[in-house]
Image (cartoon, rainbow, N blue to C red; front, side, top):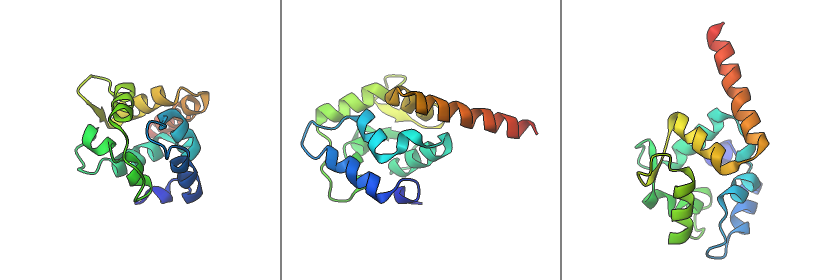
Length: 134
């Protein structure tokens, strides 16, 4: 699976272009521009798994530094300040990494802080509960 099977190549390119300058990366804006903020919880989890290079179930600081390059090879690396800001926004237990499973979706929901994300997450959760009860 690739990121372009979930997000449009054009949206990814626009999101990466928006933060080309060092210290210009804003995770909230990036997720909105690339279209991730409008995806279902399953699609967000799929993106998380792609970004989790070592398949540990976590995105560590070393992986997050190369976050933009996972979207477009050759993109710049995140600065130390950008990386630390990103981790602190999504690190629920202060262990220096972003967790998967439910924690990933909850963390990303906190990052997005938009009604669309909450609506998509809740809609997906309600559907999954309803389908599993059927």
